[in-house]
Image (cartoon, rainbow, N blue to C red; front, side, top):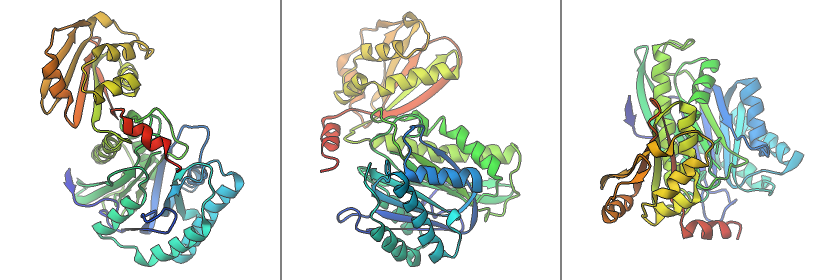
Length: 406
């Protein structure tokens, strides 16, 4: 596998664009993704009972149509809690794009992010689609414009592409995502769009994505809030010309590994770009009895507000971590736990068998002052492990969310 330049336009046959349509003031706020041929489509969506209209629209296409050729995205307005009118706007969006692209409305997926409860400004949406269609391009720059247009409180665009060899053919997987707040495990306001020119059955495409989400997007948390709009879409158009993957063979495993790399990269960069964040906080639980136990413990640590505040203060307050493990619901012996902190500045053992090691506070603070910090908890019960990602909790997070609609 090789990391290459680009994002969603890196794979053959995909075009994209991002523009300022006027939904937000002086910012790019609409994007489009298009494949020159129909794609096998897979998706995973929010587990929140309150689902935005675009989520319901996309679920209908992914679960029942199973192919798609375009995605229309907007930021600024979430089209969530908008009733039948909001769902109707998804249909209108899809029809507008379909007419201009020469495809069917049920081949057009939609995605929205922004303020909940507001109806889409359809005059701007229609005009935005009309503007974007002639501008669609397969260049890396066009993909970047799309990645920028889906941002809300994100501070940086998030895009990546990789290539692998499948059946003697070079296959590309590219992706972009957005998410900085309302991010919590179980499909987090997270939007992710992944494209590939691999030839793979819809069943295996969905299987690969559903399995991978568990170890990537579902293992990040910024603030404990699971959004109404979380969507991850994976489109495969088959233009790489590899023998179609129809069983879980070596090519499938290679494809799944590359997909995992892309999704992990996007997930980690969303966590690092959490609203107001100054550091990516990674939590590894090792020596667990089962994967389920490791996942539960790592999520409990990474979502603890007190732990996140300690990371912001560069404070090796290990009692908060042990406490978060203790209320997680997972069974373990606290008197067997070893805990380490590590970063580019070094590695330090904080507790051994549940007891303070007498570590240097100065050294610990130095390690915790880096942009990426890892906590490693060894529960000494088995061979299972899990990794979760989050960020520190800062004053700026409160400021951003206090003024979000202002």
